[in-house]
Image 1 (cartoon, rainbow, N blue to C red):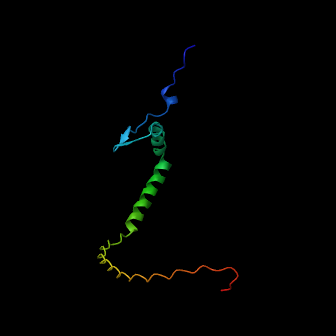
Image 2 (image 1 turned 90 degrees about the vertical axis):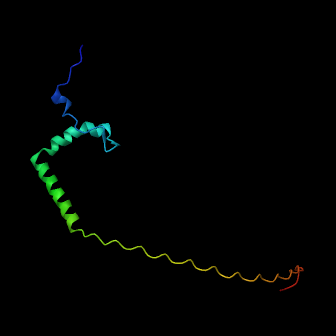
Image 3 (image 1 turned 90 degrees about the horizontal axis):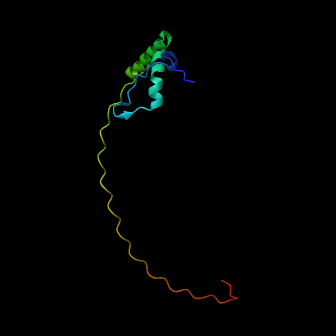
Length: 103
């Protein structure tokens, strides 16, 4: 028996994404699904939702006021090292305890 060839409709839409975009490799699965994504985006309802989303995003960027850049703070001078302390006098050796004596 010969294999039945799939028609173009059964194969799905033609992929539209290239293998690389700006030097970044696009996964094969995503490239193959790109045709379906494009078909869905052509739907008037989806296109309207995408347009509203883009408009909301742009409005958010417009309303977001950039904070002025702060000037870097002047570096603080390093703290002077502490004066070395005089060495302590050696302790007197301990005398061993004798059993039975109270301290």
